[in-house]
Amino acid sequence: MTKKVIVLGEAREGVLRNVSFEAIAAAKKISGGGEVVAILLGDSVQALGNEMIHYGADRVVTVEHPHLKTYTSDGYSQAFMAVVENEKPDAVVFGHTALGKDLSPKVASKLQSGLISDVTDIEGEGDGAVFIRPIFSGKAFEKVKIKEGIVFVTVRPNNIEPLAHDDSRSGDVSSVSVDITNLRTIIKEVVRKSTEGVDLSEAKVIVAGGRGVKSEDGFEPLKELADLLGGAVGASRGACDADYCDYSLQIGQTGKVVTPDLYIAAGISGAIQHLAGMSNSKIIVAINKDPEANIFKVADYGIVGDLFEVIPMLTEEFKKMKSN
Amino acid sequence: MNIYVLVKRTFDTEERIVVSGGKIQEDGAEFIINPYDEYAIEEAIQVRDAHGGEVTVLTMGGEEAEKQLRTALAMGADKAVLINVEDDIDELDQFTSAQILADYLKDKNPDLILAGNVAIDGGSGQVGPRVADLLDINYVTTITKLEINGTQVSIVRDVEGDSEVIETSLPLLVTAQQGLNEPRYPSLPGIMKAKKKPLDEVELDDLDIDEDDVVAKTETIDIYLPPKKEAGRVLEGDISAQVTELVQLLRTEAKVI
Ligand SMILES: Cc1cc2nc3c(=O)[nH]c(=O)nc-3n(C[C@H](O)[C@H](O)[C@H](O)COP(=O)(O)OP(=O)(O)OC[C@H]3O[C@@H](n4cnc5c(N)ncnc54)[C@H](O)[C@@H]3O)c2cc1C
Image: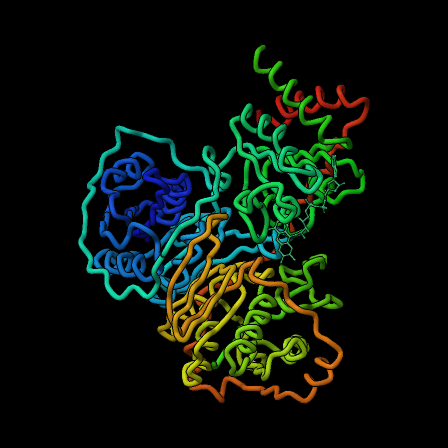
């Protein structure tokens, strides 16, 4: 049987996040040929509708309201549930982002449904879809299916390949008005610490530094390499705790979970909580003075050496490669 | 203030995972209080010390979880409750766990419930918000600061590295993120006192819930270890030759550049 699947799109600073397109690709699989409807919530999101269609959604429903400008679980769940009541979907897909993690359990509770969080892969299609997710900080994986009721999953960013962008696709973008009342949470202030440029959780290349970077200035050579490769800079908890960089760069169980094509770990020992955030990366390069460091156990390629010597040489070598 | 903390017994962080027959082998493994729940326990104790009241730690599981409850009592919690579902339920998922916990809590009138933002075993982070929804109280996840003034609550919440400053009110459920506090170690007198503190055991029959209401919605059909990565290659030779080789490998073998 084909399924009608709802996808919650997510925008940041007026731009849709890639995970929204990955969620559409996941929804297509779950639908088994059924309809994929994207939902966008915010104070001004109507203009983003077509982009969701270009990435594979069949139709878009938006809810615009001043109370949806910043995310609150009350505001977003009211808007989302209002659309769900109209649409009566068989399945729901969110991104496993801060927003998705916060909102999905509440929506699942209201739907009295199961919820499979942090999915990194989907096997099969339609009714036969089975979901794969890491457990025990990535030390194992489980295959899970929904036994009964609505199929509800959140997908980890950067794991499911989005469909090709096709701007010849067209579809209906409609809006629904929803009364949003009784918000129990007031967001007084958002202190933005994330750096400009490439979003860490969606970056294809990450150059991450640990306590071995030794100072704030020590991050400079890492930044230079990341910029050259069109990537982002990340960090271990050790580096954040030592004030070498902001916590918004932290990768791991407490920080961001990333799955780039290339992860370069410099001066990071490879504690399990760090690995929880990056061990799924396609290729891992470790640069560490200590040949016994745990990070070498997960690395595809390792250089035992001083990062302050190795990183600038790597930058030079990539520059040479690019100029050829 | 009537404070509850939801805790979970988990594998020790450093424990090696052994899988056989599609199941995690628990024999001989060390168990701990889920690290994020430790922040929740610590915060609960601090709130009680500042505002008065009582801290009850609540867990669901088998008899073995008593050990983790005693540790929480030794840290300073006042009471512990174990909902022992071992004999009644084969498969728990986040839906059933939340149903049971919420059913237990619904007539307890908690002012504040704390939990970890995620458990390091299953890693789904659902149970806290689900319980809040079932009890129809507000929740805030991944908090790094909590201040209570009467029924007004100010919170700082971690959102992918950004911070949100939030105003809300009791009753409330919050989930703890690393950075909230430094959990204390149980002291020797704390451990002695903990032995005499009440630890109640409750079974499904004691709750107002049918076994049918707690049928899992999801099913784990397999558990397996990640495909063994071929042993990584540690390069050799002088550093500049290694760097040249690495760039070559990334380009031609790994094809990521
Ligand atoms: C509940 C909990 C949650 C946590 N969450 C996270 C998390 O999300 N993310 C995270 O990262 N950690 C997390 N941690 C902390 C984690 O356990 C480690 O303490 C942390 O990752 C260590 O950071 P590090 O590797 O930078 O530092 P260290 O372990 O001190 O390692 C520094 C490394 O740098 C190398 N080095 C030093 N100088 C040089 C040089 N010049 N050139 C090359 N190499 C050099 C050293 O050989 C060493 O291997 C968490 C811990 C707990 C308890």
